[in-house]
Length: 433
Image 1 (tube, rainbow, N blue to C red):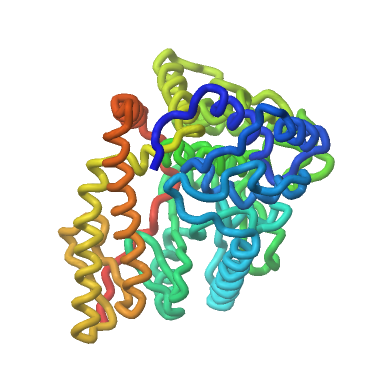
Image 2: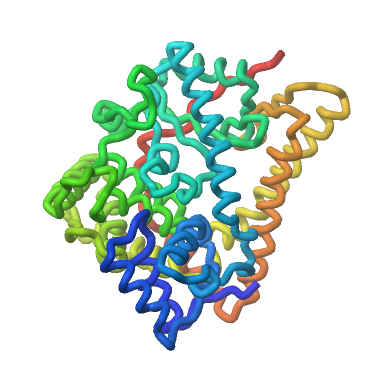
């Protein structure tokens, strides 16, 4: 795998093209600019990068709409990444996930569970030209803390299994149950609105746009910039017109007011650094319909330093051949034995015919976890393979010409102040049959 930073012309080309096209829809002016870039004699197909992986179905869609073959816009294989999905594969995956989501929300409605708040991909994918263009690996549900145990009992009765801090259906679809217990989460939950894709009596909600925009900025920092382009694409639904989420009558003034409300909210809940860095990245590369505020009303020197560091991290990883999440060499070393232990417990359980396994509380991250041995290879084998891949990439990164650069980026990421977490995984109590 070739690791390392892109050269200056390649990086500039990537930042300009992806900044222009990392949005669900292109205006005629944006489409014309993108076509001119690809037709330029100096154009070279974009490389496959970790930060772009989740955006590949959308970029291929835009390439075809612009009149090009996908191979003319982006290299279609290599980069040390999984093989890219075709649009039809992505669509098949999406509609299978949507079928499961629809059935699950219907069961919640029958059982009187609600309201349920959808966030990120589950909430935003219906606003894309085709929902399959919004890659997502799981669903994120926000539930009320007092309904947590009831929801988990319902999931268990429907055959969902809890493993590694998330729930999984028997066909491998993941669900993250989130709940909040602070003023930040209460404010988000109080400002929700019905999601138009579901019947009103199902009580399926989505956050207010200002809150949702802030949650995207926090998510970008949580992943250390590894998914910055997908978060940028989601943010385009809020800050780039025309927007199906804001409505056909939205104006640049509406975008400015939305961004200012998000910044006020961030300042109240110690998240101004996350949002300011996110807005600066959008202003610099992604052509929002109105300039976004780049600092909170009361801005300290320490916040400016942290914001500049976070912005540097985003800029470095948006056009890099390695992800710091994969480069974390020590993390991979520590996580691999844990995943192997989990796999071993599942295999032993299968051999002795047990249907449920409760792992010892002394294993961090697996306290009270349960899994079904019949699908253990799917739920546990995949994490083991991911850790092996991370370890391989980490070892390869150590042998690049400039490992010190990656080490300094890891140190930079770890030195940044922690962002607030309005929601955490719902607490799960061990259950035995």
